Amino acid sequence: MRWGLLFGAGIVAANLVLQFVLTPLLPWQLIGLLSVAAWFACVVAAGVFAGRTGSLRAAAGAALIAAAVDALRSAAVALAVGIPILPSAGPHIAPTPGLIVAGNVVEFMLIGPLAAAIGVAAARLTRRPSAPNAMAGD
Image (cartoon, rainbow, N blue to C red; front, side, top):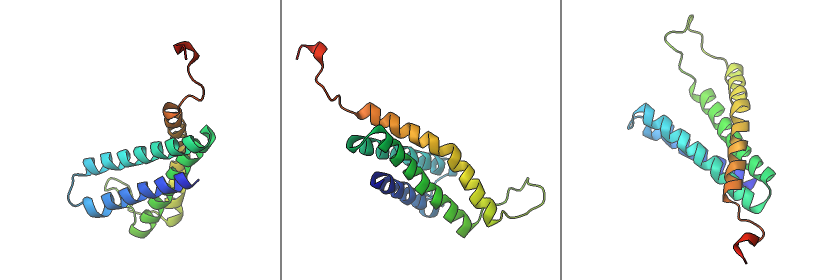
């Protein structure tokens, strides 16, 4: 759990810097790419570190927690700052707080399992074998 919270805080910090500090300086495409890269790197790191100290289930949980922390950040920022209304939308009705939270829950339901799978894959790829290789003649 601590690895998920730690790397979730890393995602939050990176996204807040990107969103509020670097947005006026960089093109939005680069901001989006950097945001996705920070999310992916922190989810992988949460899975790797939790997988080294625990099981693959711990790796999945840590990656899921990291994604959940970022989902909370996303909802909090959307509630505080608001969501811009699309110009092509029909009647210009601002999303309500309930709609913002519901959208973030649905988004997390899609991204959460992806984060868990990424965490497990990262932990599996970086795990050291527990027994020496018998085929190598050791």
